[in-house]
Image (cartoon, rainbow, N blue to C red; front, side, top):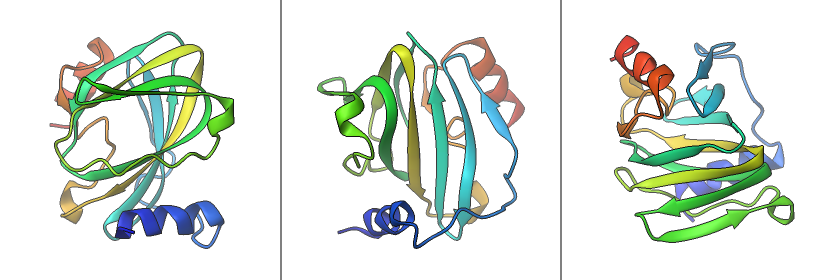
Length: 152
């Protein structure tokens, strides 16, 4: 079990509580998502994402390790343009496999939208911020492009 997997299990079990942090209350809105950081301490972070109904997030990557936990809705996740898995109500609290830095992934969301937790492990604290800002690939649309420019 990796450190990130161990952290995700502790957080989901309630042994680690969400905390107030420098990102508390900040909501990032893109063309297909809204998110807020609900935990940040040391090199670990948890961000909750609401994926908008009937949207697609293009293949992209991030410069940190991440682990996605499905919470609700319907979405199909794709890695490296091939591996595909569709999440639905039977998968609540399903912990996905760790995504290493730089690995391509994307989502297609169903008619009701979806909610996920993204656990991340960073290598440098100065770079730790919302995953929508540390995003490498085609932007989700004009709102996302504006955010990327604002926080570049």
